[in-house]
Image 1 (tube, rainbow, N blue to C red):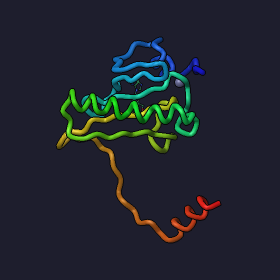
Image 2 (cartoon, rainbow, N blue to C red):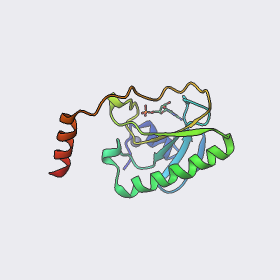
Image 3 (cartoon, rainbow, N blue to C red):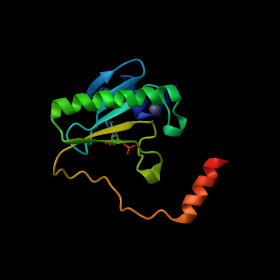
Length: 136
Ligand code: 5GP
Ligand code: ZN
């Protein structure tokens, strides 16, 4: 299904032009217009799924295989030193376009890409709550 108001539906299905690196029946891979680093690409499914929670298993599985393929090719072309695979879900997690996508971000020694967090501490309370949740 497509969403008439979704910009990534339009891009993924070719209704809006994009710098396309790869396309198949399920996905289009494009260069991000606001790259975190040179070669920042986005994997877009052609069908509209708002986020990871909505993604069918079959598309989820194919997406990671595709991420590996495109990251490998970009690494070969750009000679980058590393790679981040990022996928945001929800406003608080930084999602701004509500059509599932995977960020492929090449990393270079001494680049200024601002990904990361300050490590906290796993408390006994949090651990117990989460483990109980998984055992139910
Ligand atoms: P999010 O914050 O939702 O995880 O990521 C959205 C990404 O889409 C951002 O990195 C932003 O630069 C990119 N983006 C937003 N609109 C467009 C567009 O029209 N074309 C392309 N190529 N990238 C876009
Ligand atoms: Zn969409």
